Amino acid sequence: MSMIATHNEFNHVVAFEVSKAELLVHCLPADTQCVIANTSKAARRLLTAELKKLHKLANARLLVVCEATGGYERHVLEVCVALGIACHRAHGSRVRFFARYLGVSAKTDTIDAHVLARYGLKSERLRLYVPPSPQEQALKELKARRDEIQAMMIAEANRLEHARHASVVRSLKSHLAALKKAFDGFEKEIAGLIAACPVLARKTKLMRSVKGVGIVTAATLLAFMPELGTLSKGEAARLAGLAPMNRDSGRLSGPRHVEAGRAAVRRTLYMAALVAMQTNANLRGFALDGGRQSLRGDTLVITREPRLSGDAPYTMPMPLAMRMSFRHELSPEPLIQSADPKIVALARRVRGDTRDPLVAARRINEWVHDSLEKTVAVTIPSAIQVLASRKGDCNEHTQLFIALSRAAGVPARAAAGLARVGNKFYYHAWPEVFVGRWVAVDPTFGQFPADAEHLRFVYGGLARQAELLRLMGTLKIDVLN
Image (tube, rainbow, N blue to C red; front, side, top):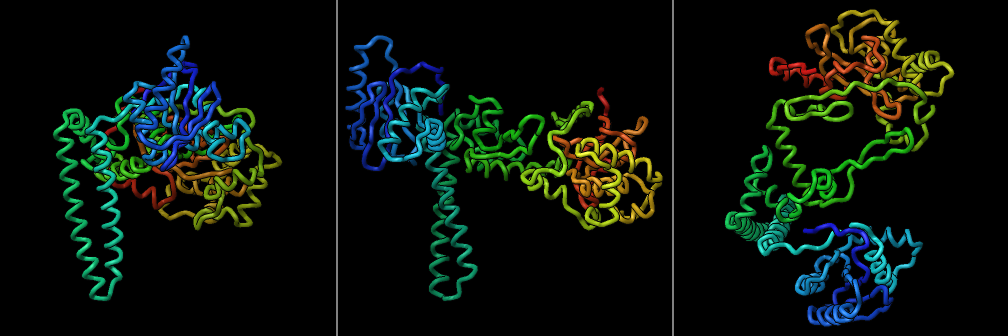
């Protein structure tokens, strides 16, 4: 648990460089160092002496800083709680980045202790350590041991699958039986602990009201993310390592990626999300959220694309680093033959001499719309076949557009869902192009960008689009605005 301290609240720092046997202590602003044993008695003696010194000074506020070291920092944390001293348990990577900011490349215990003290003195809004309740601490230890036993059971079961010698088989089966007994015991103890604690029981009941969240997921969140309930949804997602991190520069909006976070929480939430998707037939496997679409309960909000004007944030040919990020959306496929000489020659002619991907995509959209006869087709189209026949419906228009766009060097992908024509919604496919951000376009209707009456359900070719068949007769659509 933690709470956030305000900037400049502390003007004295005692930093502990923690090892198994010793604590290297650095104090600021006195700039002194000493080494003590890593015991509660030694830490209490040092911090008590430091408090006596500060009592003689006006407006002195003390902060203790130590790095998380897998449990060896517990004596320092326990003493700080007992003495009422504010304490921050620092993340090792952040302290290392702070050292780089200071221009410190060397790494020794002496240097690390000094850097850690400066980190505590200069950093803003540090999260102060709040000790877990006895129930939370017990749950964390029980859940960690339960997970360790589960990992051992999986490993032994894998070994048993390949064992041949009778003695080895007997040993593995005996060990598995013992592990299973211990595993069941920990499961029962965890359930009993949660049931006996009103706070944990209430949180568990609330979490399990969400489809896909079971007792294992709830126990994991309670054990390894006790801050839940004190964080915003964005902070919680960041702490779990599930928040997509921006990679934007200028007018370029790069792909988002998750990073860091608490691995145990992330693994468990993945399984919970997978179960939720498989048990909710209306949402399973569909790309309703993302881009200009956002799903809010049972309401799908589609934002109109802003008018596309000006230069895109990159010029063609796309820089190599960007091409690697969009290699799938720039590569040929069995039905999208973007490397075929006829497609390449046509793309070059339609694109002209422009190096602006926005202009190139607009020209390709206009050419496909103007050049293809609008007819209903019942074939599985390929770009080459469409180029030869010059006719087809939304699938043919989409396949040819994507092939030409990729041949021209502009990333493109297929999307499919529903589009409103008049007062009714019909199955429809259309492409999206990357011009600094993904933009939906529609060569069938001649729209650049596509209007907000396109409801995207899936990305991908005909195999993915076939998944829309299971929604037939199950959707009720009310247009709110």
